[in-house]
Amino acid sequence: MAMIKVQFQSGLSLPTFLKRYGSEAQCEQALQHARWPDGFVCPRCQATAATQFIRCGHRYWQCVACRRQTSLRSGTLMEQSKLPLRTWLLAMYLLGQSKTNLSALELMRHLGVSYPAAWRMKHKLMQAMAEREAGRQLGGVVQLDDAYLGGERNGGKAGRGSENKRPFVIAVEISDDGRPRHAVIDPVPAFSKSALAQWSARRLQPGSDVYSDGLGAFRALENQHAHTLIQASGRAGCEQPNARWVNVVLSNLKRSLDGTYHAFKFCKYAHRYLAEAQWRFNRRFDLAALVPRLLVAAARITPWSERALRNVPVFPAEASC
Image (cartoon, rainbow, N blue to C red; front, side):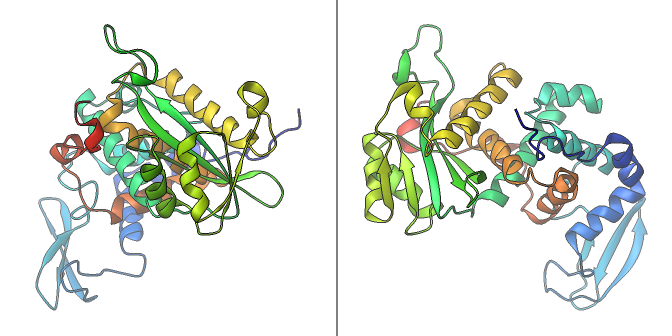
């Protein structure tokens, strides 16, 4: 088998990471650049002139126009966190450079923090990934498939009727040289025509050339896209040229999740775990840039409290999950 250059890129080594982000001062400088690349901007009035002062060991910016005081962390994902920025940057490094996934339990052991702290960090960073990927659309040639996340519960329903399974859609955009470029992986309320029509309006560019299997709900795509059904089924269908890459990505995704997590609440948190895999896949061409890119995402999204992280709305059809 020929070497795939994307997989064998050097990425960001641990010694290089420690050289760039080994001190708290270096991490603060990196966060400041990620948040205000062109200089300070007041979050209230958007003015750029400010004075700086130190209070209780922390640097603050006071806007000259409206007098609002802003710390480096306020308004970011790290707001109100008592952990050093070095710990946050190391978590970003571990999540970004992992070839598969990293559980909160493993993150706890690497960082030397409590499990609740590791859980909050992981879910906050996954939320940042989800928000960065929320607006992505695929176009051109797109391979599409359906799948389920989760498994049977003891004493529960078996098969597709299991209350512990979350349906999701995976789509892979194919480049001109026949290789996968980007992917989107989204939970859906059900494999129905209405749900797939709403999903395609959000995720697929009009006029895309879509290939899928014979699932009846996929016929909802025919009004807006050129839709081709893969006639073969089973292993033969997976090996068809216009279905190969979506099945490869799906297989790698399932293997990664099954090998990392013993269990998690699929109905509540599936969108974050799938978004993590999607974010990393779509940025796989430059592994060395994943830490600064994730830091930018963490610096520019709305802060999330633990209550907000846990109070995730589920689809109406899955309110009993």
